[in-house]
Image 1: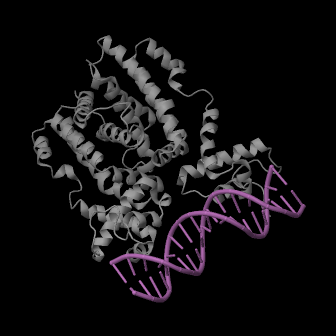
Image 2: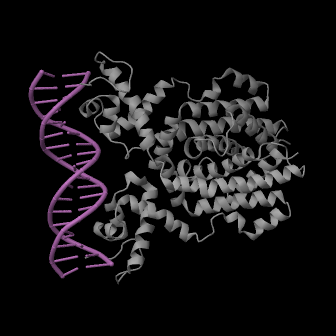
Image 3: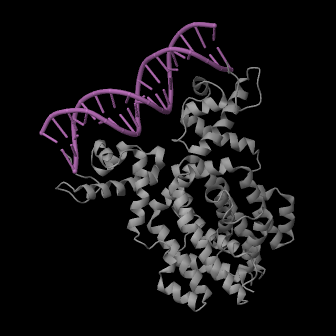
Length: 218
Length: 218
DNA sequence: GTCTATAAATAGATAGAC
DNA sequence: GTCTATCTATTTATAGAC
């Protein structure tokens, strides 16, 4: 009789409470990201995690609590490396040196790689945005807003240097993020087979950075 | 006793079959766009339409059929004015005259206005993309693909004229659509109160067109 | 064309044995 | 920590009266 997990590799012995909790969360992220909150059943999650539904409800009081717990789990998983652009030394050097291409190229490439490597979370983010779940608000407050301020501040400095045209920096940021996020969104949602456009992350980052910088240079 | 519709203005007399069908569809679009397919109940739709659930199932055999019927309904509602860029005379003239700014500005402005005026359908489109429903595939085939070809062809001509740099046209299209769609997406999903960036459609279209055209000009 | 009432299926959540 | 069995609420869908 199959009792042990079917999707996880750890088999043979019973997990500790924390291990099981983490495992359920990892599975839940995948399932929720596929079908959204209301499209996902606790039964599905239980099956994918290789446990009974009752176990789910021992670790999480309600389905909603499980969904919300994903936020913290992800936050911990990423350590404190939210706001990645501030910790990356290549990025810091490029900013220091006012090497515009390196700043924008590295940011684009980092984002594209991150999106590609965590499609599940990207989908979860869009689901939560449509559902108006708090996860979406947190993403906005803790990630999007700081990013706009950080990039906006850099652009403002370069405008003061006379290196960029006097366009509202936030609009420039939106244009740039638009290229990047929309490209990832296409890859994830509509053009999974890359029929419409099939380019490497490196090439995309290079083109986007060039278009933007030529677009705003003086 | 309240029997007549609570959300529709036509009251007093009983509707014809077709009228009722259309009314249910209009209501369904709104509700589905808010909560997605699995997040929406037929009871909700019935209540919002001011009819009993049984009526819904008289007009549509299943909930899924109702969801799918939205596609045709929208297609008819838009008449044959899909691919709007090919029918707009201002747009045609601008293309004829090779007035790049007018071409890109008008396209951006038209799209932004359209998104703003049909938020429900935009949300529906994203829901269906995450759900991998056929509506999303149709959008890709019938709208996105032709748009890439159309804009891509224009860019190719301008490259042949020596007016634009030799960058893969599809990448340029993606960058441009990215600015536009991501801007609308922000307005609809994350920045509904416009705290992050509050600009008119005209200003957004102008900035995006300028950034793109300077970005790719020779 | 519309309703009330209800069947049938499925969802989330709990109890109690091991 | 995990299971089987079960309860309750909700949801889709149908029947039959008006």
